[in-house]
Each structure stands twice: as C-alpha cells, then as structure tokens.
Image (tube, rainbow, N blue to C red; front, side, top):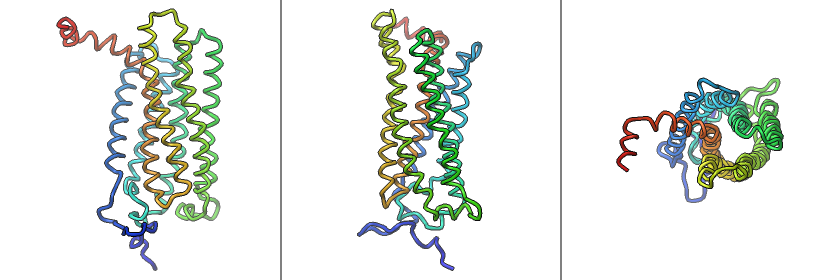
Amino acid sequence: GIDLCLYPAGAPPEGTVSNFENPETLVPVLISICVIMTVISVIFTTCRLFANRKKMWWSDYFVATALILSLGQTGLMLAQTRFARHQWDVRACWYDGTYTKILFSQEIVLAFVLFFSKTSIFLLFHQIFEVQRPMRIAIRVGIVFSALLYFANIPLSSVLSAPHVGETWASVLLSGRPQKELIWGVVQSAVGTVLDIFIFVLPIPVILRLQLSTKKKVQLLAVFTTALVGVMASVLSLVYRIEALDTDDGTWKYTSLLICSVVENDVAIIVSCTPGVANFTRVYVSELRIIKSLRSNL
C-alpha cells in the first residue's frame, strides 16, 4: 500500500517545497499563549475563590468549573502541536482517527467552557447590580442565550464530527461533514462576538448612574473593560474562521484560531474574577509589610 507519511496533506505553493523535518511553525506562539493565559486565569480564579471562600455563590462555582474545563481544552489544543504548521508541511498520515477524536472532544468541551465562563460573568453582574430590574432581565436573557448558542455545539458536533453507523473515526475526515461544521463555526463566532460586546457594554450605563465620585466610577469601569480584550479575540477568531472556509493552508489558519480561542476562553474567566482579585488585593496584599513600607516612603 501507499505510505501516506511520505506525502504532504496539501500541495505547496509554487516555488515552495514541503518540509517535514524543520518547517515554519506556530508552536512557540501557541505554547506561549496557552501558558501565559493559563497561569493568569489560574491566579485570578484562585484569588477570587480565596477572597470569597466564606460567601461562595453560583458565580464562584461557575468560574471554577470554567477554569477546570479550560485546562482540559488547553490540553486538547496542545495535543495538536504537530499540526501547527503549513498544510503542505503536514504528513498526510497524521490525519487519522485519533486526530478526529481530539477535534470532536475539543468541540464538546469548548461548548461547556464558553457557557460556564460567560455565564459566570452574567451571574457576577447579578450579584453586583441585582437591584436594577432591567439589568436582571438582561442578565437572564444573556444566560439563556449563551446556553442556546454554545450547547448547540453538542448535537451538531455529534452529527457532523462523529462517525455514523458503519463509519470509523478516520473516515469522518473524508465524509465532507467537518467542512459543513466550519459554516456553523462562522455563525456561532459571529453571534458570540455580539454576545461579548453585550457583556462589555451591559454594566457601563449602570456604573455611570451610580452615586459615586468620578474617580470611583473610572475605577469600576476599568475593572470591567478587561472584557474588551475578549471582544478583540472574538473578532480575530471570526476572521480566521471565515478565512478557513476557503484556504489551501487550513492547518495554519486553524492554529491561529486556536490561539484566539484560548485567549477568548481565559479572558472570560479573568473578567469574571477581576472584581474578586481587586477585593483580594485590597484586603490581603495591601496589608503586606513590604506594601506598607512602600506606601510610607511615597
């Protein structure tokens, strides 16, 4: 039989040859972003849970669940590092059943990561702004909308990315169905970007109406403007998904998408934890002897 490991998964552009041994790769970028975002999200979640340990609420449990799922999602991303290169530098034999299982698992886990991380933000808003009836309604609509948007991944992935009766995991890649899921990915990403903008904008009018000094309002707004990073990651993710619909370099585009995805996932966790971290810093860090010493010398 033909040894597929001798052949590239895509035709190289004119003037380029396939390079299996020492190709241009996005692995350093992917690993760096995964490590940085994971460390920050773990630190923020730990600080939040420690600060709230005596009065844990639903938002705390949701963000802890989101972090655990995000760690699993990051692990699945790092399991694909050998694909973080140009399509023509990927060996054709690497597209096997194991790879298909990783992609399917990633789609399912991603649905739960996005739901729990973004719902934890809505629940946080509920804790902070619960006296505002319009805010309560907006929060509940946001939670239901998030559930419908992200949990739709589960049946769609089961139909499009898993083997049907008589098929193997490896044969799914040749069925043409995964390409159809790319279209759903664009739709979900576009709607998800609107949801991220909604999350970013939602607390602003309420904060501006609070009977606080301008300085306090600016400080509160600064806490929630970290969500803007999530919006930017969502927009980039949408761009890469659209480009992936018609490209000869799918693995490179897909790796770029993974990088945006890990930022989007972890930023949602970080945004949810930012008020808790601010509280942790105020209560515990400000009491450290070295901090007091620095203050006294300023």
